[in-house]
Image (cartoon, rainbow, N blue to C red):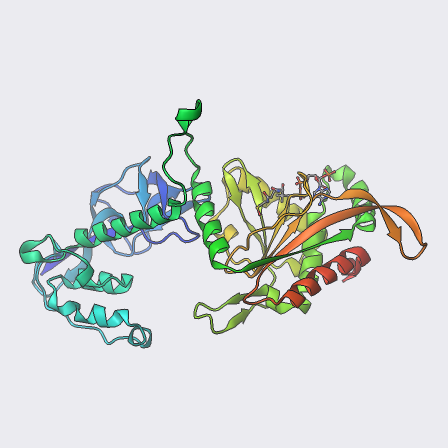
Length: 418
Ligand code: CAO
């Protein structure tokens, strides 16, 4: 009976994060760990994350140290598993020849042409571990060149292939920027992009290229809303706090989303169905020194203006100090991006997938408008706003209906008494 040496590999971190810095190594060589024990703590620009092991056993080797940059798929440590291998075959290194039992293909795999390729992988020399991993990752062994004994495909070959693919993807993503020596025309300085900028840049590019965006513009008279807000802020003076327009806009938006549920939906991954969500979690674009992040306020419909204001303050402070947790960034159904505190009138926000629409709010201005009731010009506080929507899901008529209804709701303030 021999014990197995298992590689602990950095799993997918979600939210488009493909790497992070090790802030703490929580174990040392010789430590005994149980399933779920934290072995590392990682720090990305968005959040800190504990990385657990799924293998109970003894730490044999640590391959990273505090301060190191790690990438998804990288081996972090080697653990001598407590679960003995009863086959009597030495499982380390994993390249050792072992009989392979081919799992029954799942329904998904049967429908997948890639599955034929993966099936004919039997002709190639590789250990069961490598075969299983390649199947899970959807990589056909035919695509790899084996560097092991007699051309055996090793785990390192698989890792090298993944790295090459990732590098190729990165190249495609930046290929629109030709290599130019800008210094030939004057002095230049090269500045590193923050991790957030790199992640959001990639996601924004994908969203902009992959989603047919249409943007509908409108504006709302927020003179009455502004006086309501000022009254509220007068009452809040003693508490040394105040409310901006955003909590009101959150409530008004959810009011409309309830009557137009397709704007609160997501396209299923097959593109065949829409997932209608019966909850209203609104992402708020927050400008931070490191770039744009979108924390989510959950269940906006069940919270008061004051609660939303407090939550908004906490989330935007945490976003700016890099204290957001991964869970703060998940589960959104619709996003609001407000540039109202800065300036400009109208912009075309980019949808935050898998959501299907985003509201962009611009700075309000005092304008002379014609009052249809008094038939006189009147000075009113006008807020410009834009709705970008996924035209695969939302028709132009629905887009215009949304902005018209939102304008009406903001002006009539009915949502405040609900
Ligand atoms: N019209 C007029 N004034 C507005 C306004 C609007 N539409 N929106 C906000 N303001 C005012 C606020 O009321 C506040 O003034 P008072 O102090 O007198 O109340 C001031 O502008 C500053 O507000 P704020 O921006 O600090 O607060 P907010 O709640 O409106 O927004 C947050 C919070 C986090 C969204 C904002 O700080 C932020 O980061 N905005 C940038 C988001 C961004 O970069 N979006 C672009 C992404 S690309 O699509």
